[in-house]
Image (cartoon, rainbow, N blue to C red; front, side):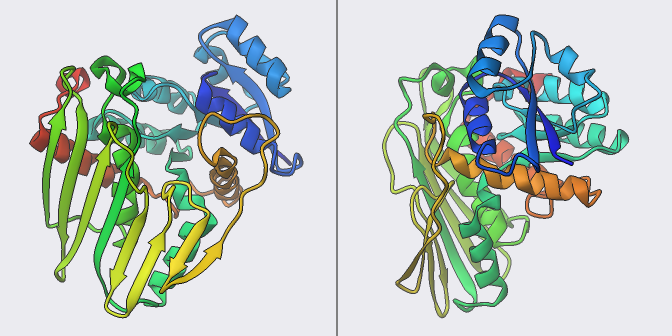
Length: 334
């Protein structure tokens, strides 16, 4: 039986997700419904992507009994409210990153998933890429000895994009792209909580973070450095330095196809898209879709690749970074 997907939100990321789904066997995955707040927009999207059903409200999707899992691709300021709608309706959910605006909202979503006995995963697609699977294998084998230092850079000029710079749209470098650097560190250190977090950054006039540098210290004298910015391009790579060598995830580190281990390079190419994409390497969204399918088939309520404990810790770290840098969202006082 194919896993029947309902897409929530008809924006750029949902477009790319739908294109990526077409690279998977139709017997395994079916995009059955698109829902947005505009029926006209949903119908347009459905026509472009060959989706049989279109809804003009999220509630209709929440009430559709013929859907196995909802892909939540709305703006992250809406993840908490809309996520709760689907979870409380008993729907399995794959929620785009960042999971929510702060750790309290994330805990609310996790609680709702547990209470309603449904699957929930934050769509940190990076974790599902073959390159990241290879990184985890190498680390488990201690291929580069004991890891002492991890560094991750992500910089992308986005000051011209309203959602990147406006506070009411959850703007700033941290929630949009910094999350990828931080999740990589947590993956390398197996979801361990850092002993200390030191963050410094510069804010835009709108009150969101433009560029941030984070230094984290872990047990056994291990460290991580993350640098991210929406003002300038950065190498967008990640480097794991161990006592016996180095693992480099070449840019784009959040959706990688190239891995260099002690100067030996391997390629993991992606399938070609059937329609133009909005974001880099978006056919790689297929990997998280397949991960969700496998979890649901096994009866799991969370993914071992991106467990809910990692999502909670990730958001708690981001809360602490925002506190140190001075970014406060309206959601923080709710």
